[in-house]
Image (cartoon, rainbow, N blue to C red; front, side, top):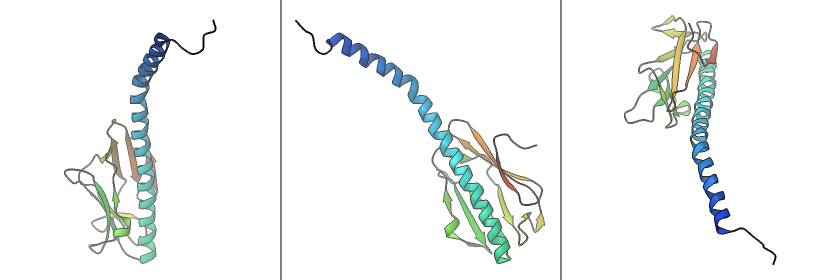
Length: 154
């Protein structure tokens, strides 16, 4: 007699092994997705900062980027010119990402320099933290260069 198919015991063993593998792999997938979301938003933030810098030069005005910490989250990034919000630049952080600092704001003057209180400011760093503990840093130097770093700059 020819046997076609699997026995019930073989089927249960295969399902059990697949379940154990799923339990091992699922946390890593979640961690990878959160890290990807952090990296993606940080790239978006760097592009937005560069665009705001270019718009400040183009408009000959000072544009302010403000990071708002709302409780409960999500946190937001907003851009202002002369106290008026430019809504096209508003960004809402993903739920898995938050700002580490509570009062980091910066502005670009008409020369594209990061400024604080009307004077050029030294390096400024904005740190984003994901729910898995990973961090990314957006670094703005006095010359206006914007870069992303995995390590906190010295």
